[in-house]
Amino acid sequence: MSDGAGKAQDGVTFIKAPERDSVSDNTPVEKLVGEIIAAVRERGDDAVREYSKQFDKADVEVFEVTVAEREAALAELDPQTRADTEFAIANVRAFAEAQLATILPLEIEPLPGLHLGHRVIPLERVGCYVPGGRYPLLSAPIMTIVPAKVAGVDEVVACLPPNAHKAMIAGCHLSGADRIFRIGGAQAIAAMALGTDSVPACTKIVGPGNAFVNEAKRQVFGPVGIDQLAGPSEIFVVADSSGDAEMIATDLLAQAEHDVRTRVGLITTDKALAEATLKEVERQLETLSTANVAGEAWRDYGEIVLCRDEAAMIAYSDWIAAEHLQVHTTDAKAFSTRLRNYGSLFIGENASVVYSDKCCGTNHTLPTMGAGRYTGGLWVGAYVKIATHQWLDERGVAAVAPPAARQSASEGLEGHRRAAQLRLDRMQVRG
Image 1 (tube, rainbow, N blue to C red):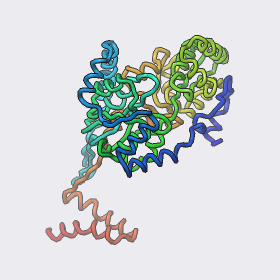
Image 2 (image 1 turned 60 degrees about the vertical axis):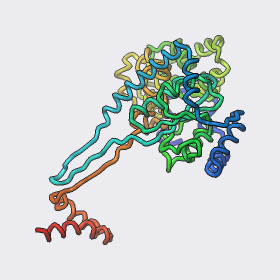
Image 3 (image 1 turned 45 degrees about the horizontal axis):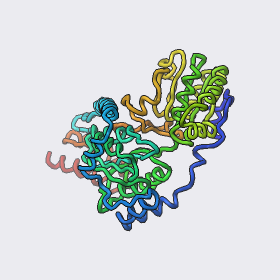
Image 4 (image 1 turned 90 degrees about the vertical axis):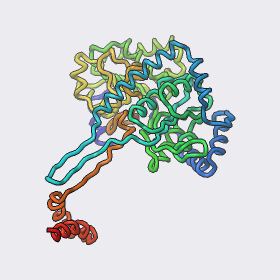
């Protein structure tokens, strides 16, 4: 165990320990995904079609969703579902617009005649992977497509499994996708990364998916950008004696029903709350309709950790760096300022993860597997690049050229020295 992990474990007792490790349980899929990418590179649409038959049991001749099919999917969407989807889109758009307003172009003159700056440039074409799931997850396209449109991306391409619910096509359409394709899995990532006769090559690929999608994103990264590598979903609650066992158990199970590998946990300083929450989870599982999924996730990956004091609770939470971190303490806002590693923070018991998952406006595409220690989640800034520039007048050359030439000479880089000196020499000749 690393020093950081060791310190995080100080003052910690497991009331319920996880039985399995969600990271090490990740089934090796590298070889198969590599074969899929190589086949799509070599045979394009034909390979995509074969893998769609093999993995999705779908015989798709034309991958792209037509305008008529978009309109039909929209017409079939339940009016209340459409209204709720548009509510979520409006909130996500408003938050993304506010975020974009904080990313400003820059121009400075640190020395007379030396001008430095950067531009905020939207990406040309982004591919958004939209998972199908067991149910139509209408929030999924909103979180990836809407911020891209706000950022000013020229073209947003969406790929979703061919057997995804029709409502998902409507969701992609309402979110603003320029083109929608019925392609799922690793073959979708390969098609968006490499380009085929049907699917245009994308600059960056974003969006969550299963282990095959995740591995495909990892393998295409480099020439193509990705948002992040997303593992199984996670929720942890940090609570003191003011925590409500029923509410905590409800929120843990709400996230656990996503997938049997969801990681859920309570980190607390109060033994009575820890024991009450354990009982409450078991009680709720008896009547939860999704208990076949949530119960398995809780059994295998659920944990309740009792901490000696607040410092130990904060240390353990920061080590976990949970994707979703709820704070249920007496002064949740003040306590939250002491936490630094998480994907998204839910401050106070009114801030349930489900609100962000669905419609409140923050993005639900977040770092997992400890990645919250070094990065945040998907946001409008992921769809732009900050590109620097510089220009110099003669005053700038006079200030910069001599130290640049001297440094180049000391490094033995004669070509560099000449390039630095040439402009200065010509200035001196001109007088």
